[in-house]
Image 1 (cartoon, rainbow, N blue to C red):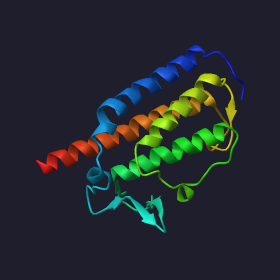
Image 2 (image 1 turned 120 degrees about the vertical axis):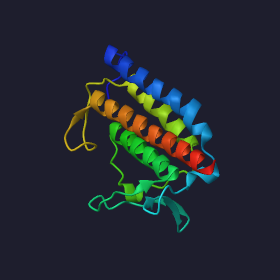
Image 3 (image 1 turned 45 degrees about the vertical axis):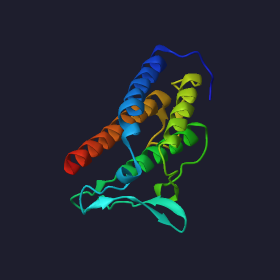
Length: 170
């Protein structure tokens, strides 16, 4: 990957990432406790389970309607998996399938991944072509836009689950 001075596009992507992270770090992640992690909003729900000492995610059948709801643990696993995978592929590594990814079990690793991703994005030419992550070769700026979108969506879903759980408990 080519090292470069951050371009205006890079600064926009980093600013978006910082805004999402500020919301996550100040308003969502601190509200997660052990009880909230595996709270199931319905009987049709995917979660993360301990299987032979590993924390692995249920993989939903996306061809069956309705799609299952998720637990907060599953959403945290999802963020970790795609972010770890994205960083690895952007550094020239091979992608990891969701069935092979073990969740860390907390919110700490997401903060580490955010720092790692921000450093990668700050030091890499956003026109660099990334292969093996998307269905087609994709410039880094497009991958970074997808990362920002996915993080925003997943953090919003976690916030909504926390609010829903709090309202049911009251």
